[in-house]
Image (tube, rainbow, N blue to C red; front, side, top):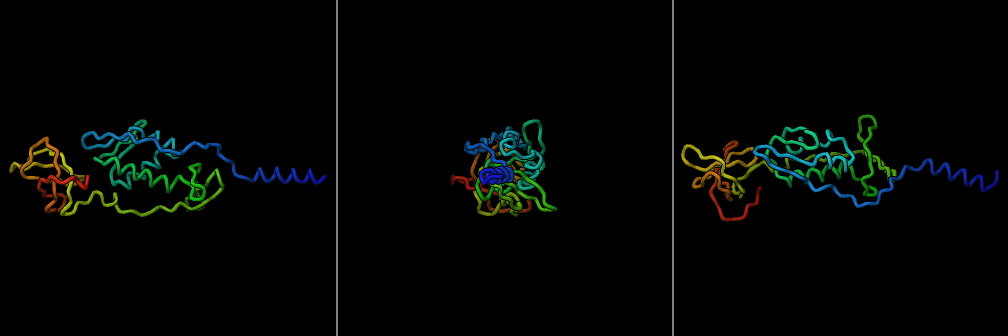
Length: 212
């Protein structure tokens, strides 16, 4: 066998050993989230479009979101339904967190990856550069403490009911917020003055809301 033949044989073996490269140089962008709030539920209308773009099992992303958002929910057709009123920005933040953890290669920054298991360890393998790393799930506070009210917080509320004493009542996540001097159907900014279990008391304010 000649030197040229040896070289070609080595080159062929090297190509076989190299990871398959995904020839996709389009800019990776997650579809803009289409989220609708219907009463006490939140509908993520293009959920499957997002999982298709991420190339991940819809149930895997759903379980991640339910755990992070602290709410029950399920997939209905191409949409996900959460059994709580959730700020769309919270869902967007969690999608970004999921993408960074379970999709993007930390070496080349591309999304051309797949999840595998090495024993009990979940691994992320890059089909573009061949990198392989364990998936490290970041621990975070429940909904980044977004569902926790503090005295002094200013929130935006829709007054949906009136109590026995004539005080307006709105809801902020799991809290009932009592605001004297307000009427049903109004949308206000209110400053939290006292919190007792899941009931908060507030006064109307003209300041811009800092918690939504």
